[in-house]
Each structure stands twice: as C-alpha cells, then as structure tokens.
Image (cartoon, rainbow over all chains, first blue to last red; front, top):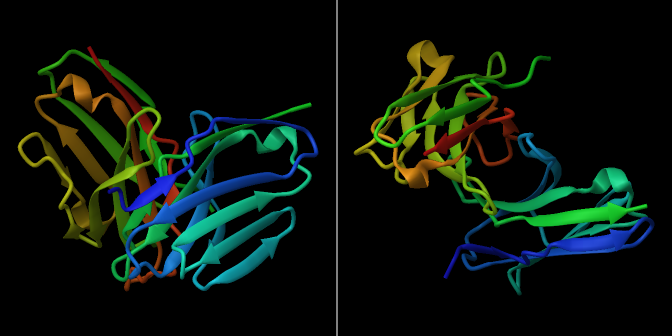
Length: 111
Length: 117
C-alpha cells in the first residue's frame, strides 16, 4: 500500500465550478499536510499547509483534514481557467522535512 | 528574492551515458532536496542535505546516482550510467533554517527534464 493515495483524475470542469481534490494516507504518524500546485513545465508551489484536523481557508481555496479517517481534501470555489494545473497532496513525516507526495490530479477549467 | 535555480533545463542522452544536474538554492537556505518526478507521478525524494551533510538518501540508487553539496550551497546530482527508466524531471528544492523542521516550506526549482534514449 502506498503511503499517500490521490484520486488520479483527470478532472475537467467549467469555469465557476466547485472542485474537490482528495487524498488518503496510511501512516497516522504524519502530522503536516500540504497541497502543491504544479503548472506545466514548472516546479511545484505551495498552495495550502495545515497541521491539524479541520478546515483552513485561503481565498477560494479550502484545505480539509480528517485525521481519524486519514483523509485530506482541497476545495476550489469559483474555479478559473488559471487554476488549470496538476494538484499534488503532500504529507510530512515527523522529522527532517521529508515530503511524501500523492501522484497528482490534473485539473482543467474550461471557459 | 531569487528562487531556486537549476540547469540545464533539458537534457537528452543515450543509455549508459553519464549526466549531471546543477542546483543553486535560495540564498541562506540550509536544507536542499533532490526529487525525481516520473511522468504521471508525484515527486519522490532522492536525497536531502542539511548544510554539507546528507540527512536522507534512502531512496537514492547509489549504484548509479551520486550527489554532493559543496560548501553547503550549490549541489550537483549525477547519474552514471543512465538507464531508460531514469527518464524523468529532476527537481531541486530548498528550505530555510538550520533545523530543517517540519513546518518549513520547500521551494522548488523549475526542474531538469531528462530523456534517456
């Protein structure tokens, strides 16, 4: 079993739609949960970061963590064509900052 | 603030040849990471440096991959000899602070795309 499993997609949605991206993880020792966005031919950039169960909101983005279910989600409201990218969930272990990534979900928002 | 720089951006080689990638992290960042991202997958950590020292190289194929970080700044990742399955994007990232603690953000460079024929 992989440490982090991510819904592979791809997802194609119309502009203005609400997007839901999801990951599950297997190790309950993981403490820090992140979402990265990766545009084509670019490196990943950090979108959201949280270390507790519950919701964290930043503009149109909401990160949700359920540690009891080992489940994390990213919601994008009022999606825009500029949101078209690959979204990667990433989880940090308990030491040394090692990131374990999901396989990524390709999102396309069409006008 | 300048980001993480990597070169070259693209490289095409034949199998069994050698190749080297260079990374210049964000100024002052003590921790440097090399990731391998195969098409359709998330990045996989190959090696992590804290200043000059190696913190984690458990997923580095040491029979063919090597990496060094001289003077705690720039780093080089080498593959010798390359195999077809090494075709991937090699990403360098850096994070700040001496502790490399769990909360620090990793900043990624644009990556080097390697194609092994």
